[in-house]
Image 1 (tube, rainbow, N blue to C red):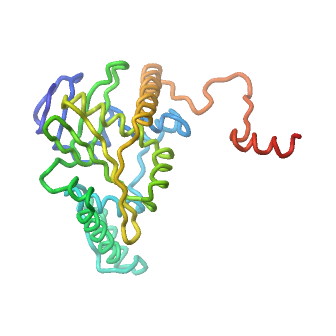
Image 2: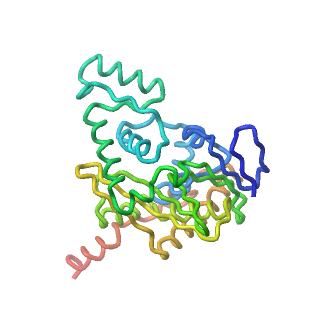
Image 3: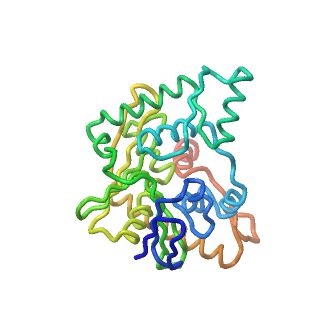
Length: 293
């Protein structure tokens, strides 16, 4: 295993590397490796063609992510600078100029109520009986960048755990997500919709490869962005993690083939005949039962 903690250190290209000196921008800009979000984008409802376009044409940060980034900084102690602005909205020219200046400096601009909101969210995390101790300052390391090579495909992979606690015999990764609804049912749907089970599996595999601990656990902390900023802490069921790992394996094979051939297909791929399509299975069965009697 090779670990580097400064930009000047070198490591074999195929060996695991852990770095604490990369900014989020540098990490996401790396083109020699693929991340969990990249692997998820290669599979349906995404496709390789869309993944490659999005990778080659990155979009500027979306304002909808500002609160999440700000909450991450207050909870983890790592993240972009915050710039609380003395405005209630961006209707005035002065407010818009202050916002644009903050973004030009790489900071996240926050209106007065947004600044109060993220402070309240961080306070709720600290008071939570499970999440609070997980994020105790000094008990872990925030946003380490981990790189390793997938042995089956030779593809370089990367992960960036929000918070990593290295305990005796255990590496505990904690992933903090802000969301509209943090109820367990909503969290379950979010895992399905955003393929967070793939994230769990890849992060676990990366930590195993780079740090070689006796054991690895991955915990999700979901927090609602509406008062009283309720929190759900969950560990993924093993079957879902196994499915996530299988999805990653398929995505890695697709990525390896695309890199090798230079061909990045859409959802259909090369065809000579027009394929058929139908409604989702549930709707076909329901309507067939109702109308095809």
